[in-house]
Length: 287
Image 1 (cartoon, rainbow, N blue to C red):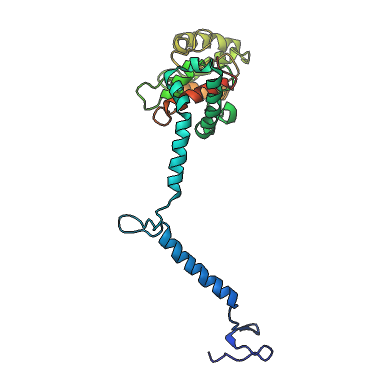
Image 2 (image 1 turned 135 degrees about the vertical axis):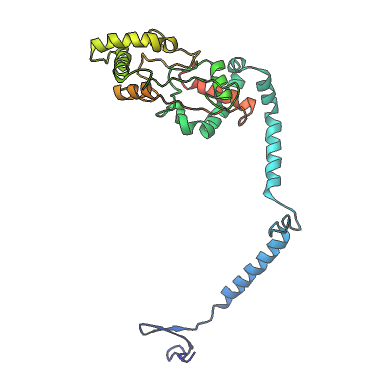
């Protein structure tokens, strides 16, 4: 306070603060600003009284109006459910094949299924079912467990290798170490490449064919066409879940990877599952 002095130009006292020769004036706040500030404080106090605000020991102050936006939301959801009830009743009583044949129900399923897919499935399978490494493409005609409406619905409902008791499950055995030696694994990889005319060693293909017939054909088929009953992928096209080059195929034979798709039965209701099944079927690869 000893440094406080009156500014010779404005006649206003300084605050006593000085930086590089610049002194701060102790100018009072404008009256309009002060009154606006006090009005905001009064408004806040009134708001606390009228609307829900402060926490209490076991609850919260509900306000004299007892208003919350949640009440509006509950009412809006109830109105929506009442509007959709007629649709939901039909979906519940019909299977996906019958729904797909009804134009009105099909349009309703497609609209809802697109939203459900975007919120729950697109993170793994990509927008429009484009897939990603380790996650199947849903827009082609290559289906590990089948691509008709019933099969797609079953996959969504119960999952693959999930915790559901009815989940589809398959497991490719580890062929390295005590099962097949490195030379045999290399020969089998060469034989698999021969399905798509990408092999380089005919002798290795012949040797690998014998191993394939003994160890792999029971699941993947003698011609590599796959087996939907066991969830064995087709090996005769260019669609690969974990890569289709020689190195990736060899790695999958040695120490196979297995993806997990969760069961959606506990996360989505029956109507939602049917909607998203119909939407997935429509992406281009449905059978």
